[in-house]
Structures are given as structure tokens and as C-alpha cells.
View 1 (cartoon, rainbow, N blue to C red):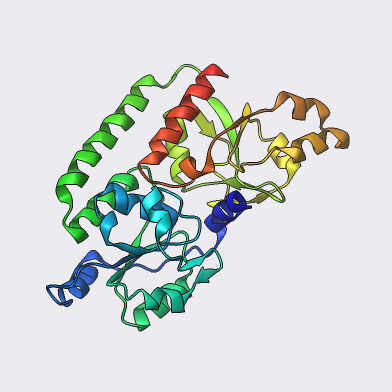
View 2: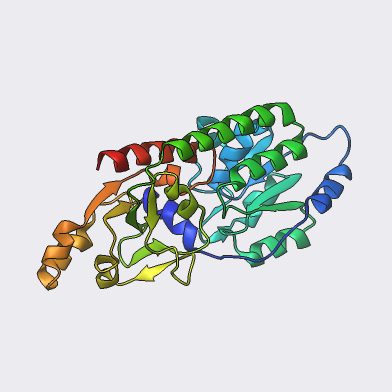
Length: 284
């Protein structure tokens, strides 16, 4: 159930709200000079970014589903995929809230701003956003030295993926992130870019949504060579399909399972998940 909740949070409340870094810095500058930062993160991946950037000591509250690093799990929960628990959040007296553009509800962010709480919104739609998020967090909280070293390491890892990919045999993958109904990833998602580093392409990258539902017939006729299973569950729908006239295609379409906590969160650990996935694809 926890895996389902973590994955389901991806689908809710895509927002278009933006808050500039200069506005956030201005708000922080108005704080008393002797007042420590008190950070609340509104996404599990943002908690990972903050800790990786060296500012984890300032975190006081996190979103449901936050499970890495271990230190982050000790903080109070301020909400989940249904939205923010404003009473819990306000009681923590945050000096800044870090929100996720693609995952937090616009009305919640508007309300936070109306309460006078500084908010900075991050986007996680391109692979390069890993580095960008780390750089911004480090500038906000004065951890540039740690972040600079981490960013160099990330750049080197991404470069190593690019050199290893198989350019002669690019296979097609169907990405399954929810089972009933079937949800997949479409256009404008960082995983499409990342999969190409493994020498494979998402068959849904031209679908008219970032994440959405499709029929099992569409999945089985997608011309994919394999299914990337990020549901954390067995693909029971595919077995059921064999009794509905799709037997040959469902048998031919094999699956690779990967950890959704790694591949559905754009943090430094995403590259760990991608490395594991690339190895599985090569061995397939």
C-alpha cells in the first residue's frame, strides 16, 4: 500500500505556479539574522535533494512517503497526495517551504503564500533538473561547496551512461507505473531522456499527457519489446489479457521490474536506479 501511495502522488495536481529565486531570497533576508533555517519539503525527492546538498540539518517537516535518508523519516509528516496538513505545517514554524511543481496542488501553494510562508517551487521534468535543484538548494542555505562536488559527480555519472549505451540496437519500452487502471508515462518526463542513455525508448513519449491511463489493448499493441514495471506489483493484468484473445502478444511481451523509489524520484539516487535498469536491459 505504501508503494501505491508513493506512486499515486505522481498523478495529482500538476500546477503552473512559479516563485522566483529572487523573491525567496528576499523573504529569507527579512528573517532575523540569528534565526536558523527551518525547512519543510513537500515531496520525498526534495527531502533527498536537501540532504544530499548538505542542508538536511535544517529540515523540520516532510511529506508522506519520505523514506530516504533515514534521518528524514524522523520528521513530522505535513501531508500526503491528498494535500497539505496546514495545521501540522504551521506548527513547525517553517522559514521556507520547498514545493514540487509537478506534484503539489496549486491551491495549497497559494494558501501557503497567503499565510506569509516563503515558498520556493522546484520542477523535475528534465534530467538536468537534478543538478539544478541541488545548485538552488545550496545557494539558499549556504552549502555550495558540498553541492558543487556532488554536481560534478552527477555530471560524470551521466556522461558515463552516454558512452556505454548501445547505439546499434535501440529497443522500445512500455513504462507501467500503475496497474488498475494501467497508467504510463507520456511526453515531457525526465525518464524518457534517461532511458535513451540505456539505449531504449519509451513507446509512450509522444502520448498527449505526462502521465495518464490507457487500455491493456493499447499497451499490448504498443510495439514495445518489453515492459518496465514501476508499480511494485506483479503484472496480473497482462496474464488476464491472455484469456481475452491477446495470448500470443502477452506471452511475448516480457517485463523488467525496477524500484519506483529510485526511478520515480529525480534525486541523486535516480542514477543508481538507472544504472541498475541499464544493466538489466543489456542482459535482457
